[in-house]
Length: 275
Ligand SMILES: Nc1ncnc2c1ncn2[C@@H]1O[C@H](COP(=O)(O)OP(=O)(O)OP(=O)(O)O)[C@@H](O)[C@H]1O
Ligand SMILES: [Mg+2]
View 1 (tube, rainbow, N blue to C red):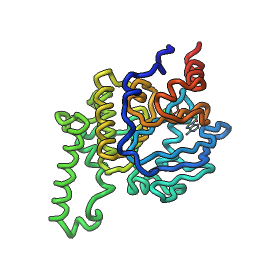
View 2: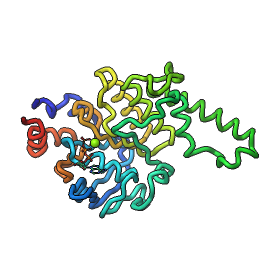
View 3: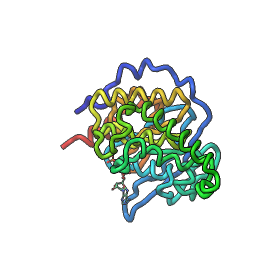
View 4: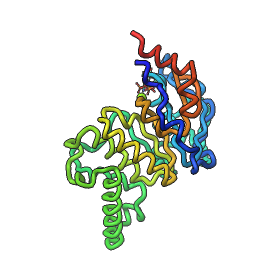
């Protein structure tokens, strides 16, 4: 289908991000191989604070590997990575969360037997006001902490459209609802940077529209977003800038309008779709 990269009318009309600030995440020369596969080859990027930065490319292009490098789930073979000026290479994922980096996974990772509310509450442990070992001695503070977390968790679930589903077990939620629950869980860590890996996969049109609205709202709240996504309509409507990868390599970076008219990008997608 050649329509995948057709310009979305909204893309041309979208104003330049009013929130765009200093670079929040900066990567230079990132490399990652798995055995003989060079999943990421010499990728550099700079994501301005308060913007939506999309990473697109055909299957196997290295998008998720890039996300794993930025979140700390993988460490690079070479290259540098700075978050708000702090060197991140070698810093494990759970520490990066405390710096304000959160993510969702392409393959949903939820506690399927727990309710939506419990799933979000479980994500709060990264920022409890008092360390867990002190709860024994500070029962009052513990109760207040739990109450505060619960209130915030319900707010987050409302934000992602799951207010009426908070007591449903995650495994019983629809696929689209599970994806939104993943976003609520990531938001529970109070991130400055939220990275979402194919959030629209498996969503129906109405759910994609709702997702788009939430991304726009998060951007308005000055949360920086890195969006890995195959749904070009969503990407073109919501991204400020787009990095295109192919075979682990940089192919192009630009605005949605520039990406849509770039011959190399179109060729990569048509190549991907030819029989
Ligand atoms: N843990 C791993 N072990 C071995 N190979 C891997 C691993 N992770 C990724 N790869 C390989 O690295 C390459 C890039 O994979 P990656 O998952 O980053 O692509 P992607 O752009 O996210 O693709 P998709 O759009 O299908 O999700 C692929 O060839 C993949 O098989
Ligand atoms: Mg992927």
